[in-house]
Picture 1: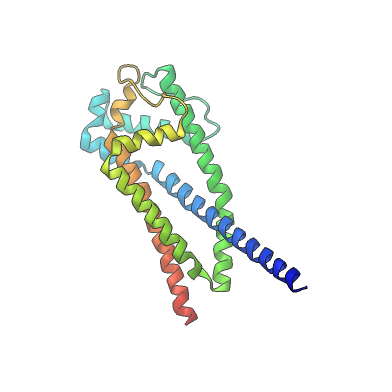
Picture 2: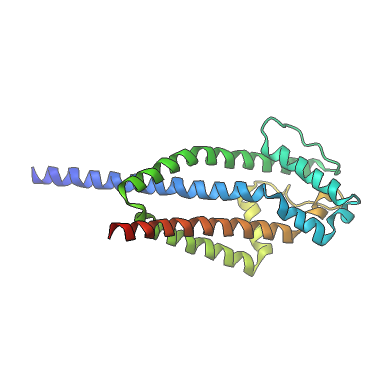
Length: 223
């Protein structure tokens, strides 16, 4: 009987640990997908680069026209009911195919966000009800270390980081644009993508720090 009770106790403990791990994964997926959604739709960041780097002149159009074209691309990437990309920029078949691949990634990210958001909400509400927000402190601290490590790798050699990023997400080389065939790349400088990654990592760290602060607040209340 003692052995059976011990086995049952171990099974319950393992079940609780697995459930906790899955809940943390869900939260991390929510924070990542939410940060991505904010970053890719933060048009003021691109507006800053348009003004500072005179990107409209590179494209032979006004800054207002370029921002309009940028918004058209974003609309294509964001909305599933927009099935064709209409742009003032000439595009090769491979270049156009890359934007369709990016659109699929956008849709996948929004799917993760829609699925993980309500689950994370109920998980956070449960933690608050039980006064166990403090359990987020350690995993969030480890996650922050991972994000800082990735940020450091990016800053040390962004070109290699950017290449590895694309090789990880895409199965082809359509993302390698030829400026002659796909002049849109002339108005999407590497520094803009670096800023996008910087914004994404910054948002992620802010959300994690807020979670740690929330957890430490619960510790003070429980004392």
